Amino acid sequence: MNQADNPYLAANFLAAAEASDEERASFITKTYLHLAGAIGAFVLLVTVLINSPLAEPLIQSVLGTRYGYLILLGGFMFVSWIADSWARNSTSLAMQYTGLAVYVVAEAIFMTPLMYLAALRDPNILPTAGVTTLGLFGVLTTIVFITRKDFSFLRSALIFCGIAAFGLIFLNAAFGLTLGPIFTYAMIVFACAYILYDTSNVLHHYRTTQYVAASLALFASVALLFWYIIQLFMSRD
Image (cartoon, rainbow, N blue to C red; front, side, top):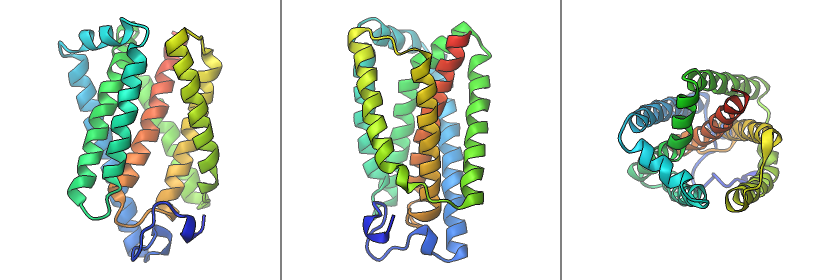
């Protein structure tokens, strides 16, 4: 991806790959510190929601009707799009943090029904899925940092696969189409590919001032991987 095609770059700002070693190291450190903070906030919010009186009504509203999950998914995608645009704001740091916070809250609300059901089925599913997710994330991150490979060429394929996956999810929610374990495995591979893509963007394409937006992108990919690993473990239980 050249500079002209870089969607993260703006005038008068350097991409991380073109910055000094000190600036690049500072940017990467801030990105992963913000990612850790987002994950911690997510875990706290989900824990509160699962153990609150809101958990069962939320699940009933999602599972009680054929289109409940589809409505929840649509709302989450809309809020996520707004939050991501805020996080990419190049002039307001406060707006960037607002975008990250809104996304974390939306992700927590969206994932609460699945995590609640997983905890009811087997208390070991969530911690095991969490450790597996972080382990895969660590391996994929290490691959990118060691090889320094630019995975931005995956962008078009990821967009296409994302649209196709959403279409299948819509058919599943609207018409009761059974996706099966193959879809779950495919989405785990899809999430891993996104982690490679987002991590390489941290190394090569984000501006050094975009650590909030970079952490949001990584958090979204980690959350997606976590979602489908939970589903995998639930299907095997």
